[in-house]
Image (cartoon, rainbow, N blue to C red; front, side):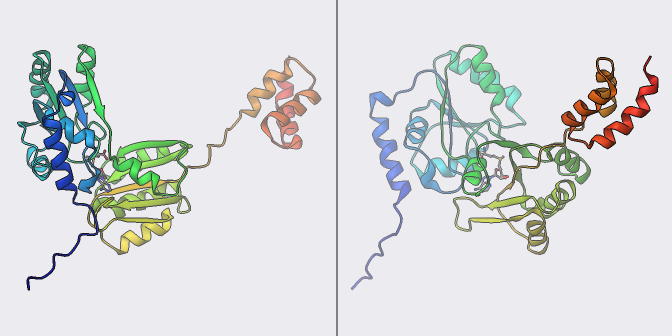
Length: 307
Ligand code: SAM
């Protein structure tokens, strides 16, 4: 007796996708108008491509890929046979006019990146800008994005967030950028490479303190997905001792608002022109939250300067 075929515990996404591709190819409603189509692709799990994403790729006249080999694997998995060409940071300026000409001639050009939402920390913004400027249709087919997937699963506040992309690779420049973000009243999101993770977390501790809540989200939607939470200090210590591979998002909980330092002397000088010393001291103490005695001694030093 031949062995019984084991039932897979998860759906066969490529087969499902292939039937969507086949069906949409025969569906007049899926035919695309001229324009640029920005299609999100998975950040790992093949099942995360959308139905609309598949139909769009299957019906585009051509697909601009960040890397044609990487995207070739994805397209083959879903049986999509469309001409592809590369559009990346190094050839974008030369390729853009060609793409704009093709759209002007009536073609539907899809843009995809190696993973996730094209244009976000990926090539494409100038192409979108030029299409918009020239009045060509731009359609975004949404889907996976590593920053948002990481944030949604992080347990950090999501009401306000700041996407900072990749930090500079050198420590001095990186510390400068981290320092500038220290007081941002929002969850901070960074993309980082695995070989720089430990050094980057060490710089974050240095510039923001060890106590800030933080998360490292790694290999999201993939087999070895991991979301590690802790303080910045704990995470820095963990990743200094444990080398990791894969793709990484770092998130940091919001910082305390920068203390607003009021210029007591300037306030006093201004109030002393309009009111008595006693009232000026009371008003400035109230405004600044400083002790009356402290404001009073400053006022005495300023008072002789009054005419
Ligand atoms: N456009 C993509 C998006 O929508 O997320 C981002 C492209 S950016 C060039 C690639 C970076 O995204 C990686 O270095 C990593 O920081 C992050 N990233 C992509 N896929 C990821 C995943 N599955 N898990 C964690 N981070 C990921």
